[in-house]
Length: 175
Picture 1: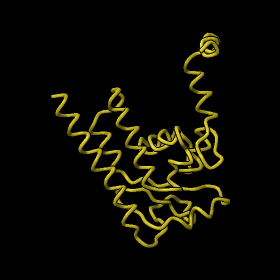
Picture 2: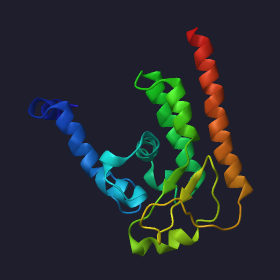
Picture 3: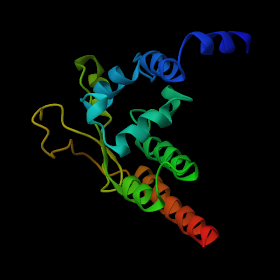
Picture 4: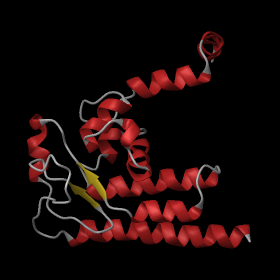
């Protein structure tokens, strides 16, 4: 606590947060939001949309466990948790949170040494998480195709449905 107070006296809160975000571990040997953004989505953090940003924020407490490369449904689960907190604290309205959680979340690996994870990319949902084809560097909407995994797809749909139920309850409480 003493260290935190001393740090706060020498640095602004914005600078402390910036330093933290530049160094935080976000899974798979990736440190910092810029590296994670490029690793998971193939773009600079300033180009991330709300869905992608929420997914990255959801990784922070347990990046290896929550990684969409380990289980694509967990990326959506923790994305939804972040969006709910943003609504709860007034940074986002419920409608935008629902629109965001319904968006597909495409993970795009940029480093060739992670080719093993690409072989696991087998099913995609219109509401879920997919891996953009590594061959397709132009950013068109082709994805790797494979067998459909109903269990994973069901989890992703459950996340979206649970978010909708939560939103309805929140709207009832506010009216």
